[in-house]
Image 1 (tube, rainbow, N blue to C red):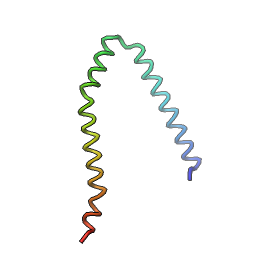
Image 2 (cartoon, rainbow, N blue to C red; image 1 turned 120 degrees about the vertical axis):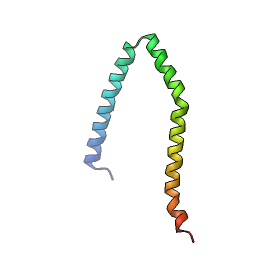
Image 3 (cartoon, rainbow, N blue to C red; image 1 turned 45 degrees about the horizontal axis):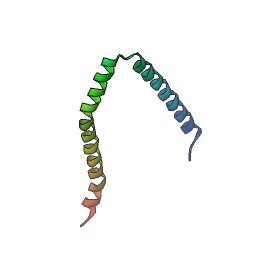
Image 4 (cartoon, rainbow, N blue to C red; image 1 turned 30 degrees about the horizontal axis):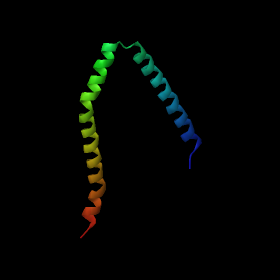
Length: 74
């Protein structure tokens, strides 16, 4: 059940998100073509590493979740 606290926190988080997105949008508008290409290149090169990190974290979380079940079996 949602409470007033949940709604106020959600509202606060949404406001913070919108403020951050506005700052990012302004920064991107002021970015030169060279800066944009450099940033996109960094993202492209780091994507495989980022995906691997998320995958290993997911596998670790799954192992921790299932470990007590495996230990409980005779």
